[in-house]
Length: 268
Length: 82
Image (cartoon, rainbow over all chains, first blue to last red):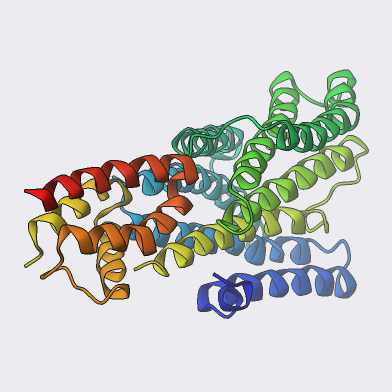
């Protein structure tokens, strides 16, 4: 399937359009009302919208393949992971919006434990990736291993110096906060490596979908590293432009799923 | 009503899901000028070469797609001989 054909697809256009709308909203709010509470709270609408749209696309993709098929199982696992992330993101977003509207926000039990669904989401997505790698009989290839090793290794070293070591030596985080910040970045690097391995093994002529998925995890990795670096210096705030990297990650996951569906639809 | 050999190929491809297994066989047969209701084992072997195997690669990779295609074609050849 050609890129042009894919980019003209309605679902792809919605995902691209939402990305542009979100970026424009963030920039406009930063210019119009920098530092205003209502403006930072408002960024949660396009932000959460991106993961909700990606989840809906993923559910359509799972319905297309059926959960009993091999491809369906891969996308079911990825969808469960993204749905868990969606729950966590919505808890955060609703809490902020409720506060802004004068209500008491989300219950502490929910808001204090959003890292768990995030972590569980990673586990499901990792299982989806590993299942795909096993199903495609992914074999080791010296050239690809070198590329993946070089990229993943570089980001592992960067995240160690930018996130892991400063977080561990910081006194501003609890032990569980330290654990989650390091775990999220480590899982981003791991998933990026597996995703890229599958994409490289399959090659661009066969499936570009996994390149989009690798790009999504790259974006997620940049967002998590950036967030930790800003939080360590106490300069992170809701509505920061670094959040657009998470938005890009969620929309790229939706685009990757839609690409695979469109590709396989072209065979029937 | 699909022929026995057509149903056999659809069943073998059921790991792709029912929409894709039936759709891929149908489109493969259409590309060689046949259809599920009249397809012979020989037609299906050609449909695998022309359409089904290249499509399968995007699901399971080239090595596994080749293995599955050879297995199905071997069974179809036996069905054609009988």
